[in-house]
Length: 136
Image 1 (cartoon, rainbow, N blue to C red):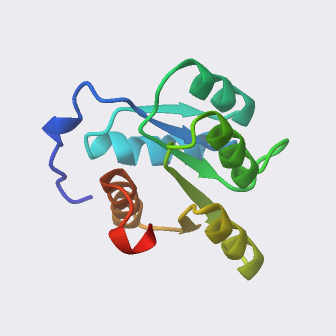
Image 2 (image 1 turned 60 degrees about the vertical axis):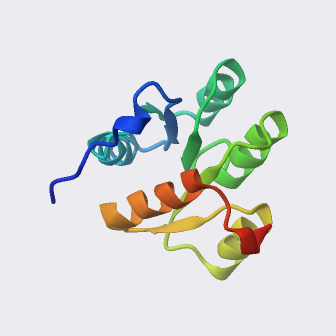
């Protein structure tokens, strides 16, 4: 992995919440974000993720789409009812056109698996930078 510069402006900022029912995938995404200097909390249960967002502040939620009990898009929609300003990134293994269309309708970028760490970090950086003026 290429040397990554830590982002000193992130010290003391709210963490990113990673949600994936697969512990290995959850930790891999969290480790990539930590390696880039982000504070991260990782959970493997979407119900726990919902409780966490209700209890504390997060900069961003990164969620897998396919999870038992509640899908990633449904989780993000639920979290946004409580915190409409909360940015989110959806990760999905080989998403079909329907999944892509639903993510667009929800206003959530979709990162298809498998992906390179650089693609994950780029998506996160774009989300944290805020929406482009053209998407208002």
